[in-house]
Length: 135
Figure (cartoon, helix red, strand yellow):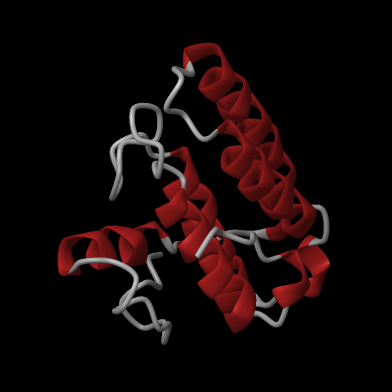
């Protein structure tokens, strides 16, 4: 069940309308039992990013986003259904290679992933896991 259309989240200033719609579609109902496998998927994706990295790839930001997501996924019982859907959306957005900025080819490729994650973290009360981006 997709929850994205009903979720109140201030992403309008972060993404263009098409990207907002894409993120909201990724916010799907996610049972607690899926958090472990999602964490494994993040680890595999990060390894693929490192394997495919070019000089412009911001591996450091990718690692920070992955670490924050894995921290969230390690505590599935801490979140309600809407919060789990938001976390799922942030995970799925991170796994996309063709989001707002190409992740591998663009020095800012993971900045949109971090902005999405940070917005979700604010929404679910876990600002302590935010990824700091250069100003």
